Amino acid sequence: MSEKATTPPTSKRAHDPAPSEAYAALMKTGWAQSPLHGITVAPAVPWCVARRDALSEAFPGIRLVIPAGNFKVRSNDSDYNFRPHSAFVYYTGVAGVEATADAVLVMEPNGVGHQPLLYINPRSTRDTDAFYRDARYGELWVGRRFTTEEAQARYELETRHVNLLAEILGDKTETLLIRGEDKSLDEKVKVHKREAEFLTFTSGARMLKDKYEVDEMQAACDITARGFADVVRVLPAAVNTPRGERVIESAFFGRARIEGNDTGYNTIAASGSHACTLHWIRNDGDVKLGELLLLDAGAERDSYYTADVTRTLPISGKFSPAQRSLYMLVYEAQKAGFEAVKPGADWTDINEASQRVLAQGLADMGVLSVSAEESLQPDSGLHRRWTLHGVSHMLGLDVHDCSQARKDQYAEGTLKVGMVLTVEPGLYIQPDDELFAPEFRGIGIRIEDDVVVTEDGCRILSNSLPRHPDEIEAWMASLLG
Ligand code: GLY
Ligand code: MN
Ligand code: MN
Image: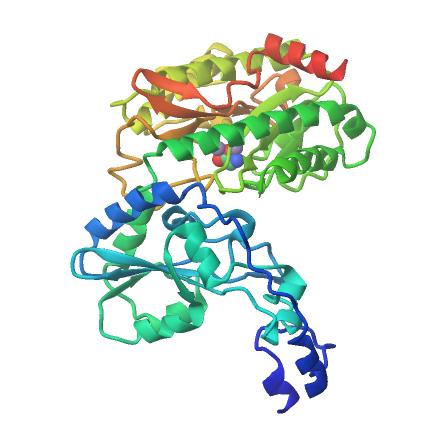
C-alpha cells in the first residue's frame, strides 16, 4: 500500500511515516483484553427519556438528526477542546470528557413514535491502525473512548458506529437536521422547510428545567462561589503583578477546571474603567487599589450546565463613598428585578422593574435631562446611556440558553415555575463621561445572580455570594485576613 492509503484520513502528523508491515503487525498483537467493568448509567439519562418523548410527539413520522458536531480547528493541527451541540447533550445525556466529536443522535420514526439511535466514533481498539496512528482520535494519542457496547450501557441507547450512518440517510424518509454542526451531514441531508422549526423546538424545550438541571445549576453556582472566594484571596497578588486581571482570570479558571469542566463563557475580569467595556475579555489590565473589580464568571459542570455570576468588588476591600452610592443603586435595581420574578409575570417585567429603579436613581442624581418616567418611554430611553443592556436571560447548557426559542415562549412570554434565568442590572459611567461628576467617571457596576422560578417567586441559586456592600466588605475581610 502507498503511504497515503495507509494513513488514516484524520491523521495530521506529517512526520509520522507509514508503518512497515512488520511494525503494523506488531502493534496489533500482544495486548491483553481490557473491557471496561462496572459502567454505570450517565446521570442525565433517566431525564432524557421524557425529553425525547416530547420531541418525538412534536415531529411524528419524520427522521430527526441531531449532531454533536465536528472538531473546530484552532490553528493548523490543533483543535479547540471539543464541546458538543447543546441539543445533542440535552437529548442524549452525553457530556464532559465522554463526549466525542462526530457523534449523532438519530430519532428514527418507527410507526408509533421514534427509536433513538446513537451513532459514535467508537474506541479505536488495538486491532486498528487508528489506535496508534491517528493523532485526532487514536486511543494512544488522546485516550480511550467507549466501544459501541459500552456507550449503549452508559446512555441506554442503541449505539452504532458513525460510519453506518450513511446507510440510513440514503433513503427517502423525510429528515430534519440541526444544520451547521456537522459538515458531512450538511452535505448528505437536503434542506427541509421545517428545519428552523425543528431547531426552535429543541431550544424552546429547554425553557423549563427539570430537577436534574436545577440541581446541576445549583452545583455550578456553588463552584462559582468558591471560585470568587479564590479570586478575593489572590487580589494582593493581582495588585502586585503586571496584567493583574490575568491573575484573577486564572484563579477562577483553576477552580472551574478543578471542580467542573471549564468556564461556561469567557471570564470578564475588568478592573477600574475596564468594567465599562461590557465584554472585557482581554483581561490584560493592571489591578489597582482604590478601584473596583467587575468579575463576571461562571463555572460549567461536567454536564455542561453553567452558572453566570457577576460581583463588583472593591480591590482594597472597602468601597469609596462614590462607589458605594452607585453600587447601592444597582443593588436596589436588582432587588426590584428579583421581586418581579414570579410565575405568570411577563418576561419583560424583570427588565422594566430594574430599569425603573435605575432611571429614577439617575434622575435623582441630576444626570438625566428628562424625568425618569419620560426616559422609560420606548421612544426615549435616555437612561440607557448608563444601563446599556437588558437585565435577564435564560441560563442552562448555554449561558444564553434557549436563544432560538419562539418569541411567545421567551421574549414575549410569561415566567413559569422551573425556568432558570439571570437578574443582572448594571450601571456604567465611561471614563470620559462629562455628564457625571469626576468621582463617578470610570466606575462600572454589575450585580448578576441566577434564579429559579418557584411557586411563590424565585430562589437565588447564587445566594451564597454576598451582595450588599457591608456583606461584601465583611466577606472580603474574612478571606484576606
Ligand atoms: N456573562 C454573560 C452575561 O452575563 O450575559
Ligand atoms: Mn448573564
Ligand atoms: Mn454574566
